[in-house]
Length: 327
Image (cartoon, rainbow, N blue to C red; front, side):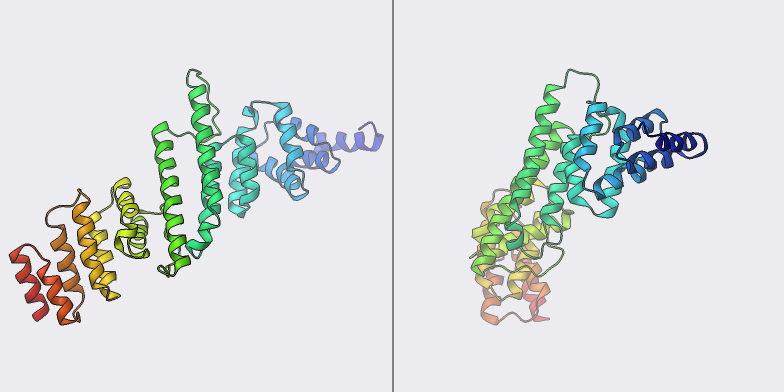
């Protein structure tokens, strides 16, 4: 920095050039601290930080050096908040999720780090066997949320909160942790079923509890139908339906129709038994499931058809079932 040529360059840059050019000059000459201080002093926009400092740092493998300098200049990281948010958005657009995760951990942004772990778990997985091998990501996500709860409980009396870290209520965090726990149970169960050959996932993207309600209902169906029999996975499927307040009757009907399609008629009787014993089914749910099966499939063998119709409790429904099969 004492070099005359270096000082001459700086003189012309400061007088005639842009902040980006000045910052890029500092970075090229390994003067990262000076680049950062200039950025703060001039209150440069996030784009300058991304192009002039952040991209050159991670592309040259110096992200840790940058993080150390950011922390040494401002241990709270508050001064860097808008720049760190922009950096995360930049990495997300580029699909550089491993660098993003590293940065989120540096920022102590526990909630977003947990979300990135969930993406690592579910992204592009083609089977529950694959997901079973990636369960460690869900454990890491749970750890991040636990740390977040601990940190928020410690700082609950303080007024100031860091604006660039994602906030979440304790109730929401607990709900997400329950989802993670239930997804781990679903994964272990379906992984075991795939290994035993009793279950095979054919739909992509692979259904998980991190999707919409339709996907969650799909998970419940897969679990009900994936084991040795319906009873094998009904407990987990029932918890999925209860935890997410899904339409249980519709899900049972979907599962029953798939059983008819696979000609597993005895399993339908077991499904009805499980639904009845769950304690949450309406009196008419069993009949609804059976009528739905009869209306959907016209070629049920006579013997099996008789068994399904006899299982209908309400006489009017029984007549409807007979009429629908006759026509």
